[in-house]
Image (tube, rainbow, N blue to C red):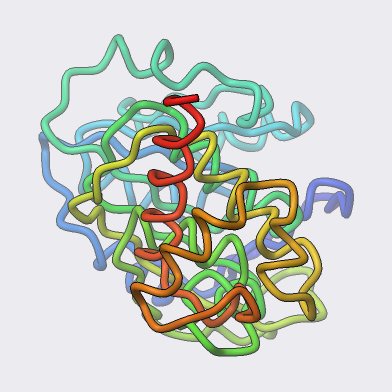
Length: 270
């Protein structure tokens, strides 16, 4: 078990893993080799960073807590293939940061700070980088929402968006007892593999349409999307045997893609 002699900061969501076997299991989910670059957020005590460094050519880690500089320098002293950037990952220019590396495969593997889990995955989507695989440890409830199926209680706008981009797999659960300090929730390890994307006219419009569709959970598409052209929406829904009285959680991501494309086709022809 890993031991940490440091002051943990709640504002940064610092909960560090203790068991190296769990770390090895997480890292083993990706086929890392000496042509791989791995991005990690929140290296913390570097228990995962060191394991990644054993298998990948390079590890680029982002740490927002500058008080960890000495600790990380000490723990990573023997890992010359690790670079730690002490800055906010959400404000980083990922395209610029990876320019200096030569790699054939790119991975994101991280026990992410739970309070910014969704912003992190959205950052990766909008980075214009191709990730061969993304592996994240997230709060269990968030993980259930990320990979929720159409029609389930957990199905939400983020479920639709992520299902458009990725094949998502629940890998395994991690007890809260495996962390220092112990959080109030259990965790889940998810893997995201890129899928062949359906043709999309405008990704920003697609995302806005999804958010608007789910803005009031109990309301129908007719009510949530009344600012859009309901005739076009009704026409698309009829093709899939739905009416305007359907709720967003009953619609597969493919239908949202079709809705977005048909609406844009109409608006652009006006």
